[in-house]
Length: 588
Image (cartoon, rainbow, N blue to C red; front, side, top):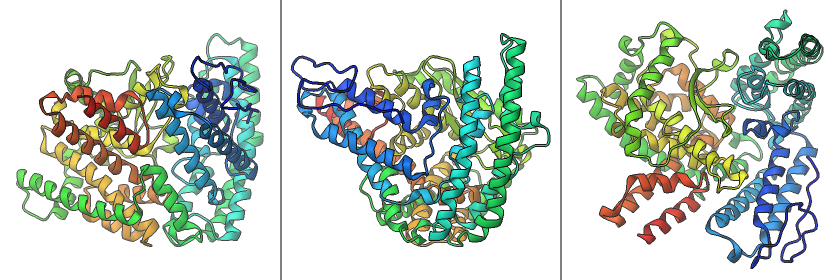
């Protein structure tokens, strides 16, 4: 982390911030504070900085599990907790007040998380540094490979990554001694992510990918030098480290992995889960409240799914209908992965003419649909990767197609709305394009707002020209009940002591997904407790606010204006969003 300088608030004297200037009538320069807050966040998380287009950090890597790193985090939280405590809120504009509240929320929850020994379980199979580095190495993701400096940046990052693997093993061993380890089922998924990386031929290695796409403008000497350096780093550093980690996981970590499924079984598990619930929902809801809400939503959506079952004339039970939908040949029509991508392109063409009816505020960032990279496709879910506002990288909707013959399309219309347009692509792109927001908010994320928005947009399908096929509408209900089921199984696993098998069984009884797909999902919730709660909690809040606005504003209610108000300021804790919408209603 680079050394940052302190701002003495409440006076006209700025001792450290280079850009600090006193504005007339103000005692602090809040713009300088938000700028330095963003810089400090990027220095602590350079991989995310790269994803956000902050390329000055492209040769750096965080060692997020180490005691030294956690001390830097604590210093960061303490610094900004003291900074904002000294600010006179009356000096701030409406949007600055939002920034103030967001910083306050982030540092408070950040310190609560630091009180828990999360670094004893530094990696899992679903996301993290080892997967991000692999994605960047592929050459088509966040890490740029256009200049010689870009190539040397990633070379330095690979060197650091080889050391990072050692650090991960150190803290995994500490976790073993304290019984803080991954469930055995997750360790089994983690093992191939390291064991499968070494290759007999360096040219076949994932980390060699960038060498194959070197710009033609590079001189022959530069190409030769970079090729030699990448080859040496891969063969002499990365491959040995991958083998070392795979051996460690197989012989030490797997035998020590736990048979329990939720973190509630860990000595500090219940306290940690409470913080995760707060972090991901941005509410004060308890696991028990969320569990009961999930059961209620599952019951409601099961009733809606019964109506579709009757509409298509299926005579069996809803559980039998799930099996019918899972295995219906007409819903598995694809023979080539390209046909799956083409179907999403078709969906895009259907909604394009209708988007203007609901959205006056739309992003300029370009958009693409791509198949998920092979190295992570087996364990990946469909996802959106943000673009950059300078146009160098589009927003990308990634679709995993591990087995095209088993790919079921019944939920594709709904999936496109959520991950792409008007879901994540609209929300994230508009946030990044908003010049009135400080940078730390342009690239910020709150799952309850961001995933809540994406789930809310699934309900707009009919207005956008979709869901004409009852199976596609059933897909929407299926995806919504999937998020309701998450409320039940996530809290079940981590708060009520459910086993992996119990969670899988509950999901199979209430969803039209395959057992393989559901198993992957349950293992995801086991890996990242609380994240799965964000979708439904956020969606229900946005729907509640829309209904409130419609009821109170009557004929003055404008759906385009409502969407603009929700989207314009970017992600924020749900209480702040509610305050913003209530203020808009009061104005009318």
